[in-house]
Structure formats: structure tokens, C-alpha cells
Image 1 (spheres, rainbow, N blue to C red):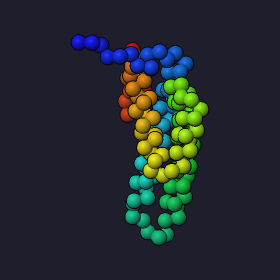
Image 2: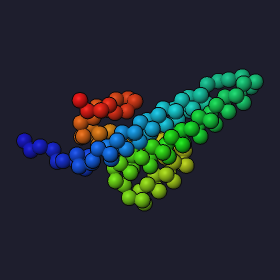
Image 3: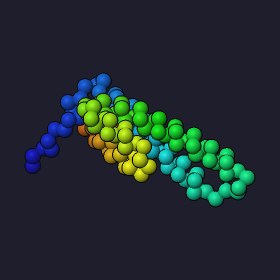
Image 4: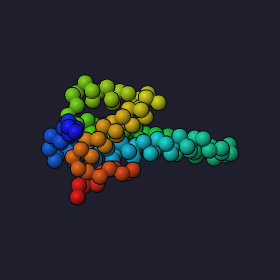
Length: 130
């Protein structure tokens, strides 16, 4: 059997891996916050407190967008993406469903890079290698 080919992640330096790790963690929290905000919108609520729910949903979406943007910039910098890919990912964050797909895709790429470098990656991000 031939060993699997070495990926780009094994050639990343420790500073780049730290950027990938922290960027991925921000992206994961942005995804979870997006899911919570969507769930908050699906909860039936009386008219009297609908404005409060709307305010929380708006604050959650803005926070998720900011987390997404910072996470994308850190993760893409750590993975060595060019400026064109970074700009495209940032612009796609402003399209409702596409933004979630982009975040999931980047999270997967970050997970593969970190696992190839020896990190354990769980639901809330990566732990330092043992």
C-alpha cells in the first residue's frame, strides 16, 4: 500500500497553524450563532415580545457576521489563500444561505489541515497536539 500524499497542512509553520486554529474556532462559533438565531426566528412568540426577539436576532446576526469575517480572514491567511479568494469569501458572507455553505466549507478545510498537522479537532475547535 502506498501512503497518502502529503497535504499542504504538513508544510504549514506553527504561526500559520495557530491562525488556522483560531480562525476555525471563530468560524465554528459563527456557525453555531447562525443556527441559534435561525432557531430563535422559528420559535412562536406573542406579538408583545416579538420586538425583543427581533432585537436579539439582529444582534446575533451582526455578531455572527463579524465573527465570520474575522474567522475567514484568519483561516484563509493561515492556509495561504490569495487575496482574490479572501475577497470572494468575504463578499459571499453577505448572501444568506451561501454564507453558511462557505463557512462550512472553510471549516472542513481548516479541520483537514489541523488534523494533518496532528491536532485533535472536536465540535468547538482544535486542541493542541499531544
